Length: 261
Image (cartoon, rainbow, N blue to C red; front, side, top):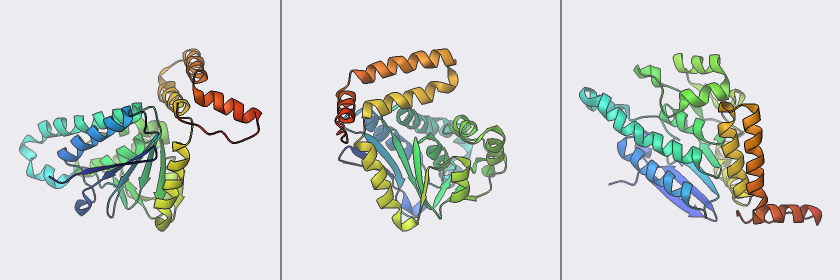
């Protein structure tokens, strides 16, 4: 069976690559199962300090495998539940991972690929990338957490526009909407993404994880509760070697050398 998700670990950077390039990385059930397994593995491995999500071939991800849907129309409701839960477990693992997740996208980002992009913490794109939420084009509502993330990223009315009228739009628009952090020429995407991932891999990983947890919970807590959690998170960071190194480096007027612990 083809390895539908490739995992490479190098210097604290785990790279997850969607690997069905012949169909623009359209997701089938096996890809979702493999993505869940890889995502859960990198989330719990303390040696991994940043996760990179990317796609092999001409596109990041064109969405779900609609051709497969066409072959399984009679049992599609059950199939969607089985496949979708694996996808959602993968997304939960990445969102809860106490380390940054960087999306590196190119070509086409559609449907489930769009949802996957929304779930990343940071994102960089080639400047010729094209985007669409796509789901209503085949008569279905979104999954992959996009109905959770999109209103928070782009606002309610724009989220509804992208959902109900899923026209293709360009990378500059995606950045303006708040879906991307950086745009770079297509040829520079691998090197620029590697620079960002390398920088994150050398950062204070525990502090990154605490910050990510605070941000994720911020919209469901009162200000008072959030501020209390900030103190607890700061206290946990204060017990790390990285905070000791950061403070010492500041006092000594040098750049800190964080170890991720």
